[in-house]
Image 1 (tube, one colour):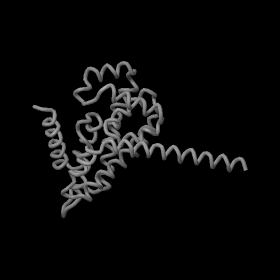
Image 2: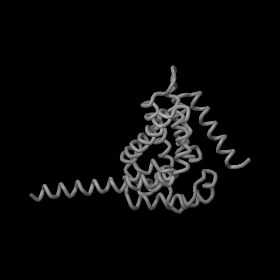
Image 3: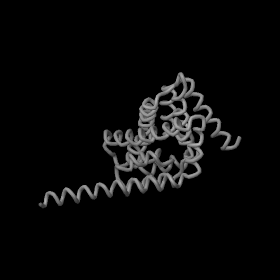
Image 4: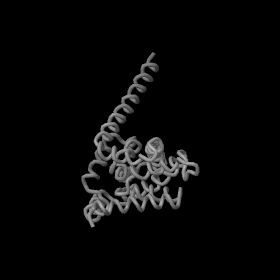
Length: 219
């Protein structure tokens, strides 16, 4: 069986679980999506957004946003714990040994480490909207022993925004919700660019605020 066929089976299983179990199924799938990246939130959340339509909708948009965020936060603590209780050498060994089964590699970890080193704790929020990075960004947070409430807060904020946007897109597109997956897969580099712009804009705004406060205090 080819990798593409396996991924299709995983996607169909995830959609079936969500359709059958409703919110518990969605929360469980979003938990697994953070631990097992081959389960794509780019498919799961637009599908859930589509299921908010109809005379007897399975979901509501606020419900998908909340449950998607909760499942993602719980899943994020898996890699956070991995980083906190193992050192970087052991994490790399685990990726070398088992990473291929999760479609993760050392280069993905290197990217997450570089992002965390460059942008600090705030990347926990922005990184939740970047494919692959959103899972492994929790590892450097654990290695740095980032404050748990702050980690949970930034993770919840980022995953809630991601859940809302994808579910909203699925709702707006209706039966054409699969277009969301196609667009993100086809223009994945655009997602990276937009996130980079958002990060630069955020830090630019913070810098401007500090300059303004400094100017006021010096008057």
